[in-house]
Image (tube, rainbow, N blue to C red):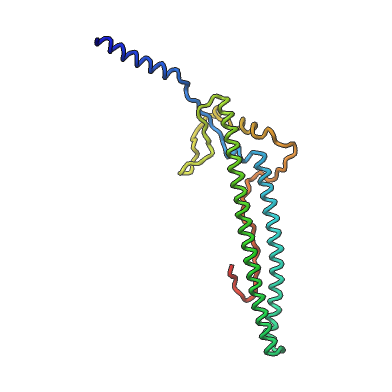
Length: 221
């Protein structure tokens, strides 16, 4: 009876060893998602569009600023009239009232410029974030397909930093990296003539809002 139990134990160990041996060894591959995103031809095109729209917004702000400075000149004229000794008291009072109204109009113009710049920044940033999320999802699918074709059981992104700011992959033999292969795959449909500008990522920064300065009056913005 004891020998039967012993044989059963040996048989269980043998079966476990056979199952473990039958499972394929894990195969790890690495990819650089940041490099793939930056090198995608559609990323170049999107960055170019964002820079163009940012420039258009800046031109619009400059136009609004010129209109604001016209108001400033009108305010200066009214302010000078209110201090003109040659005018009657009623004329001076009217100039003072008109100057105050012009000052309020100037403030509204400054607020308009500030609001426009902030809305433009939010819009550009949202467009960039939406595009980036879409592209990373698309690139991830392609990278996964390439990894599966190569028999990988796990694909790691070496670009993403950890909580302490270092790469998730400290070291990987180049033989296990498929970034270049995925890059060829994602750019295989690149147009013959692509609207590629500066390859640097778009920052979606806020267009600069020029200042409207009123002499003798402190800015509220």
